[in-house]
Image (cartoon, rainbow, N blue to C red; front, side):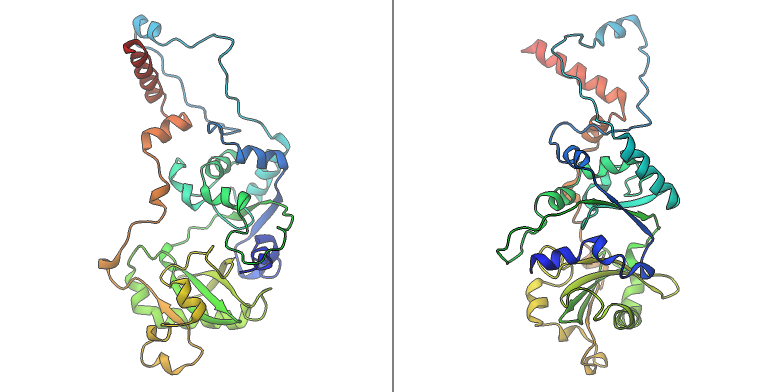
Length: 336
């Protein structure tokens, strides 16, 4: 995998070429001060919160005495930076896309951070929603710090202009998403995207699904992308129409799902995935899906989650938990 291939998979590199095949989106340059804020390792403080938690009134004078906030001048106060101009630009873009968006950077979306959002979703309506996801995502950090990981060429890293991508929010059914692997402009493999779940309709319709995706590839993608080796994601709607979702580099930086990269690079063990009839078609890609509920696996994003109590504390969504935490800390200090 070459650095040039990674650059070609940036959203702004392919979106103008395939705009009519994919979800309506807006691309905004990411200011340097916003990037610095997103990379700051300090306490998570989300800029622009419009719904700060209400402070509960103490039930008695005794409780009021127990809760004392320090007036020490040396106490550092965490204040979220504000980006008024950028916030206005982002909000205008969100409104133009219907009021709700799916955010991402040049390559990655914060899929590993969905759990921290109050709606447990990547659906965002404000810049603060986006910041909360981005600040909590290892995928976003990797885009900033290691965009060319696994690249084999020794050339200097190209200069990057980071961008915030806002995609019109659409309710996509996970069981209708598929990842497609292309080598030398030939579609060699298709994998169920949400491989952790069993979907009965995929098993029953896999030949039709494979045919639809292959027709879409030949008509709209083949020989039109900037490289001959790449990965693309698609969505097949209830009418059988295929939509382009994203492009990814053909290499280890991209999740191979139900394949292995050794299989895809060498093209070994792929023919065995065909039914007897399909095997006769030389250009028919291998199709893999979760065949039964026995093989269902936990979500690969679970390892990124934190306990809910910790999330409530970090976001300030539960004032009572914060009070209990402060009491606990005070008691510990008194015991010491």
